[in-house]
Length: 76
Image (cartoon, rainbow, N blue to C red; front, side):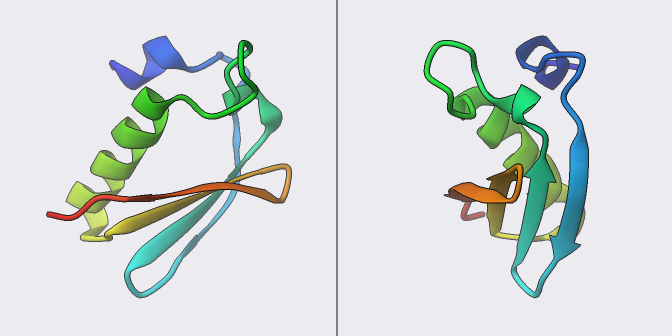
């Protein structure tokens, strides 16, 4: 529920791929913050922690419109 407060309602996960120790997520550009055109740290952290807890994955790779935006590492 905390994640929803950081996302625009029009944010969509367009595609994903689960790899051995990482997951690749592709979003539309509505995930980007309006002020600096990046994904906020709160959003990256919330998504990465949720995925790590569910799939035991250490790295979450974020794409927007098929362009690499960031790779976020969370070590247990």
